[in-house]
Image (tube, rainbow, N blue to C red; front, side):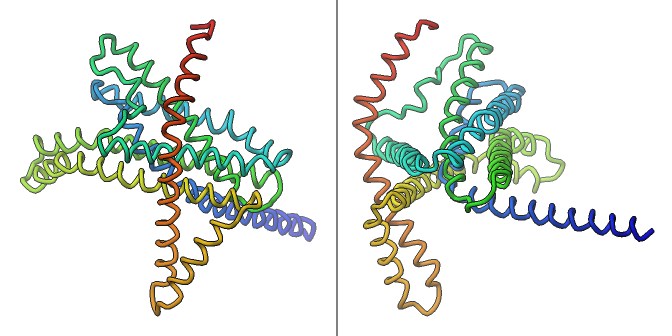
Length: 323
């Protein structure tokens, strides 16, 4: 009996350790996931465009197909690469972070420039305005969405990897897997709600048994375009802020902390004289300055991307023998 009790006590101890490890993984994943806010919001804001023009019955299946591709991108391709970098080439993470941050800055700046009436927004390039073959168009849209998701997922996983404290291999793997699954569920669950909100509102407006429900339905239909606009604005601001922050942090890690430290000290100095809300003011000033830097970097990258990178990439794609 004493041996059985000792075994049960050992099992209980192991369960407590496992539970504590799961708590640690979840906590680290949440912290790491918040660092990728810009890419996450951009993903949620961009994806609904891929179901535009399809029959309502095809919207959720298309979202599911894109979500499944996102799971594969993160768990099958990016997770092993991220773990290999963390364990065998950690010196590559800051440069990769700078690339990811630069991409976010470019995306955000391009949206700002496009909103001001200049240039052409590249994310709409592959979207055909008048589909002739719905099945073929669906394949095109899903393929394009998964390719875009791969870029955003690479940013998310790299940012998350850099935010994880030094730990053992399995803790890093568990945290990254938790981030990958959690962010994908949140993003594409939100996308599913967004793309069906109009249909739900229209159904409530037409078939609601009482007038308040019908009024709510009409309100949903009217508010969704404004909500999408707000989501785009918030996503753009988040991309510029997070992109600028990533670049500065990566530069600091690589031995160039001048701008990073200057912004940090300036924000601390502004907030130091406040009796209340000092923490929020410090964060707001830092985010504002990071966002301004991100916008400047993105604007500088637009000519490089549109006049050099895009033509070269197009030429390479045209030379692909598999086309």
